[in-house]
Length: 357
Image 1 (spheres, rainbow, N blue to C red):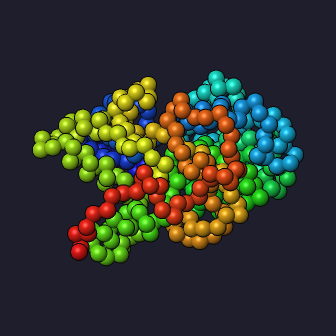
Image 2 (image 1 turned 90 degrees about the horizontal axis):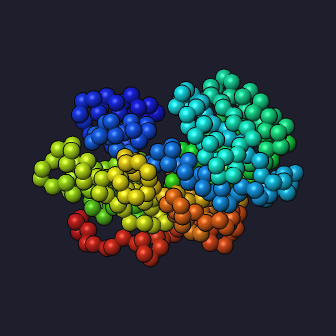
Image 3 (image 1 turned 180 degrees about the vertical axis):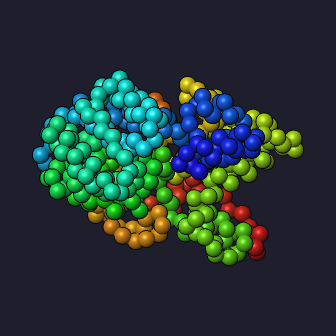
């Protein structure tokens, strides 16, 4: 359902509350208030973070994280974006181009592709050739999580080593997918993500919570972390709304929710909290920055041991819009974290006796 807003539309039309069912613009959500709520930030909100990061840390500076042939060149940007969404994809691409231009990082190329398994390799070959010919140093990836494999392999074939900037693209900002990209290229990768730096799941998280409550090992240790955030929002909203429960009273309470700022968890808020210009029906408001360490070893999000990990700058410090720093700390090991063995002291949950005894 999250791949299109058709399901969410039908839920709202039937006056049914739905959490994380996909959506659209702020206006689209407002027209369907109080039925639809998202957990992640919207595409437009993520753009704000990406562009602020680019404007403050990258624009007008040498492409120091690219391969040897490009690293001394002043950055030239290309935006590669997935266009299967039609008019909405183009609207977001136009908005990205305008925002980057305003931030002093006008893209030299805007390059669309479609996720077609039969033609993606050919599309990648043509797009990479255009970027290399134009002297693009920095590729802003607003993509699906599969296509970067084709783009990076083709870049190696064409002996082209730019910076690869992940623009908060869903699942492209994960270890599980990152390990599948051409590592000679992905060693030049970094980007913005709404995901938080991980903590060892054997220490905190849904798996540990389940065992604390039941005394048994979690039957779905990989699936639970994916589904729990939606239930956490629902349970908090039900508790806060009280005995007079309607879609309107539930929505009124959700609009007051603000989570505690942290490094190991995203900051969520809804309604008018002074963060966004329009009423907010999406959850995650902050973001952080990572770079790819092609030699680091450890577990990915599915618990598979392997080589290659995202490293989060400054321990995973997160920023709201307007808070991004100007210092580039990409590919600096000092302070970078892939996964915490234990949560930072200020983010360690309290200890209570187990109901299971």
